[in-house]
Image 1: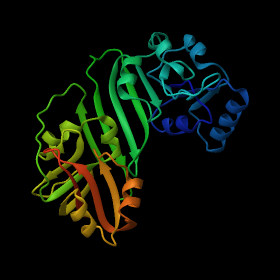
Image 2: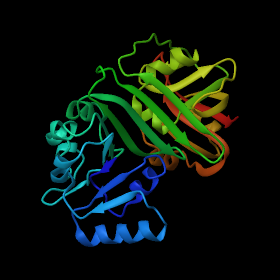
Image 3: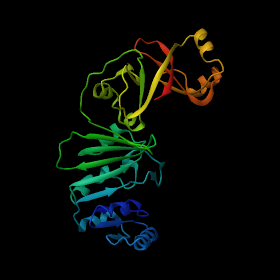
Image 4: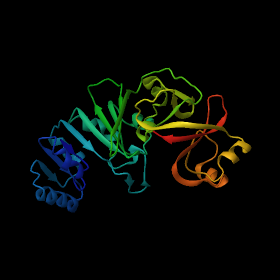
Length: 298
């Protein structure tokens, strides 16, 4: 395996547990020496460090996998979000990379738009969306020159208690059902939200969406779900009279989904104290009515 953006060697360190030999390329000579020292200190004997430009050095070898984590800071443009603006420019060098391997693994920022990434990269066979404690940390793009262009998206959310996984084919179609709030409410984890698989959840888990653009789901029976689950205790119409009485001296965790006002504005407007065991979802239903869903976790 070749790591063409070696840096301090953290990724190469973990790859060394899975690959027989790792070539660590780092253009900065001092950084390459630090990585080499660290590998020696930890008795990692299957990583060889090269203080060279990895893209130029590839001409001498063929690898099972080439890995890159392009720098998201450009010398002239500052912080960037498009792959073509990162260093090195992976889209521009794809053909070069594939001359020296059949499989490429790219790690990118979670800020990268998936549609944009698919356009910039070719031969994407899998996209892994990785979240930790419901915060998306990175996107991993697996490119395979010998596979058809039908990417599989795999999402995972690591937490202390469990790992939530959900996967689907990017071109998969589905039938979404809409309904008014029932007994339980489901909120997808951040990895699924990043994937955009909102309609698929309805069909895969046999649950209903509250609105086409409201990515909240409901069911009469409690199910296992890759995200948070709540019991719906109240459905309050968003009318001043009902709201004023319901929110009087209220302490709750406030969230919005497909709603015209944000959390900070609503909390201040209705004098809601943050915290406690109650959850308030300000949202829009499939009948276009705005409501507050009063919930507790299950």
